[in-house]
Image 1 (tube, helix red, strand yellow):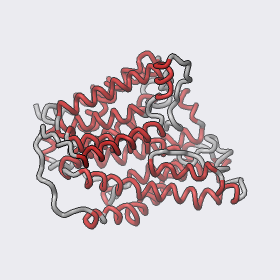
Image 2 (tube, rainbow, N blue to C red):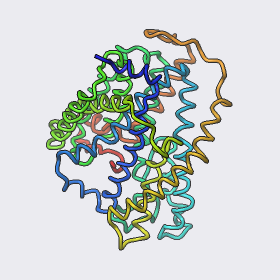
Image 3 (spheres, rainbow, N blue to C red):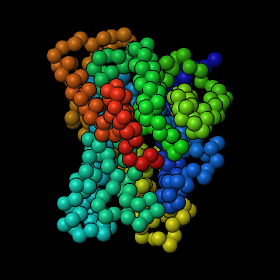
Image 4 (cartoon, helix red, strand yellow):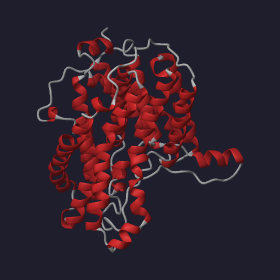
Length: 418
């Protein structure tokens, strides 16, 4: 039977289906936001459990799995922590900085019901910039108060924390050399998954609207494993269809009762395999979208544009109106952002990075623990803990309360889960 590695070699590492997945997932999330923002988040509760709610819950894990597959491949080819971090920062920060700055400094003052002095001196205004470091906040003072989903300026920013945490985690694995060791990566992923299952027992929130944010990190790590074990995994589109249906069924069962939350993790593993199969499928180039990577811009700019449309056109608060009007505006912003900001910034890589690369390490190589390595590891650990706390990835207070015998309230996920 053909393996994923055989398709990987045929594609020379560039799966044509990944572009389709990026665009398809980004547009699907935009469509879902049109319904959620125009009708209110509780609308999803009226949907049949199968297949609609599991399909919605599968969108972001597949996005993170896709990232996990591609990013670890890039990390192995680059073979440099400094280069890896530089690439990640230059890819994420430009569009994020642009969206947050435009929202806070231009559109916020135009749309707020507060006096400008009160707007610019509000702690909520300054906290909105926390997204740059992984402390995402979603509202600005006095903005969108009368929308069906009030106060939210960009709820899509809730994934910034988990995304940064994924890159910090992989950076730690690069420092130690573990990222090339398949068995060690498998052990790390299993331990992380078990910690998530344990956290779900403490944080008893139901996953009726979306998966817990910590499950997105699992999706990223599963993507890493798919890439590392690609020579062992079959390339079978028929098998992928069956795995996809079973994964959706597992998520549906988990949504019925929090007692079955553990099923979401094997379901995400299955979705990661499906992502890889689609990514390496021989699909033709996408018309129009092959000119640039617009998916991140669609995701990051779509939400505030949809909220603005609902604000300015209260008589037309329908999903159809929001979708039809937001789609071209979002595409225009995403295209402009890519060609005017993101792509030029990515072009700076050759000027910021050394031309000589380190010799490629073999699988099983372990890095020597020098004082510099220890210092980098401590810094990454500290930053990872900060992001985990700021994004409420784990119910740390509840866990501490249990250990101390205190009746500490359950920690909920940070921000809205769209």
